[in-house]
Image (cartoon, rainbow, N blue to C red; front, side, top):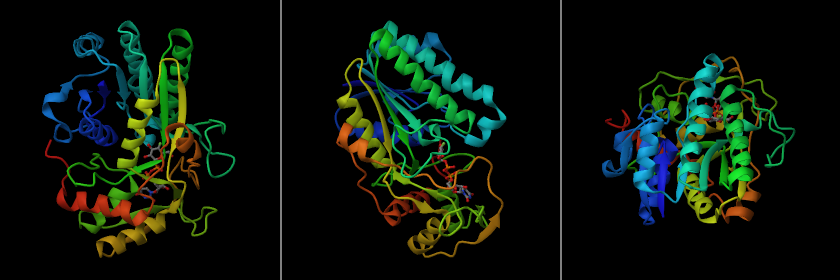
Amino acid sequence: MRIFITGGAGYVGSHCARLLRESGHELCIYDNLSAGHRGAVEASELVVGDLADVKKLHQTMSDFGPEAVMHFAASTAVGESVKEPLLYYRNNVVNTVNLLEVMKSLEVKKLVFSSTCATYGVPPKMPITEDMPTHPLSPYGRTKLIMEQVYADCSRAWGLGFAALRYFNASGASFDVTIGEDHKPETHLIPIVLQVALGQREQVEIFGDDYPTPDGTCIRDYIHVEDLADAHQRALLTLTPGKQIIVNLGTGSGHSVKEVIDVTEKVTGKKINVKMGPRREGDTPSLYADPTNGQKVLGWQAKVTNLEDIIQTAWEWHREHPNGFAE
Ligand code: UFG
């Protein structure tokens, strides 16, 4: 298949692109490199471009002639979205409308979309199923939910087939250690703890230990990035024009912040210095997926289900690339 990938030089996008390339698909990666890395993709597949540049987007897509689109490009920092909501509505919602207009004009009717568990907000119970109410807590989560709703409208109006894949906490690195997570600035727990293990940070601050969880720290569902890639490929092969798929991508198990730190000490053999801090605004005590629907709709389930294995792949990447990608 010929697949057009927005944001394919980013963390999850580059792992998906790699799997699709290995499976023999032809790729065009459209990325403005604001968060993505040249070093994460094949140079011959990369077009440096912005979704706001509709002329370039149209030209690139029409020259390539894709049968499907995977859409990763987005602003993704929850905290930043609270301070700069308009940036998020423009980058995420407006640019997605640009993408859909080009897809419609070229009659491309398959879209796999990078969505998030942040669409749920505070769910009524755990684990989270796709039919639970969606009340996002941040502008980031709201933009992702709005995009899902726009796809549903386009599906009814002109037959767009879409899969909205609601990731839980993407983590880990490629099994061959060639690509991995590199955000600047880094805000995610596992890479921060690994930076402490590498001596690049003095300590990790735990954002709150007075939550109603067994050890008082927040619980999340850490899902390996190679498992996310597998789900994207399956979604692509399942999609037909007009079909609407919404699927949670998680392991089904939650781990606390303290557990992540303990397991990281075990994996790295290093002492992790910890400082207790106040709660971070917008954090939910516990979030983990019911992955049953992924099995039913995509025939997918996470293969890397052990937190130790997830952290091991991330550790290998960070140890071999302490400063991330060269560019
Ligand atoms: N945490 C700390 N200290 C840190 C960093 C994080 O204690 O220095 C805690 C957080 O409070 C949270 C957990 O570690 O309880 C995980 O935090 P991350 O920032 O790694 O991930 P989030 O769960 O906040 O965010 C993830 C995705 C978002 C998505 C969100 C949905 O990265 O894109 O889940 O809740 F929107």
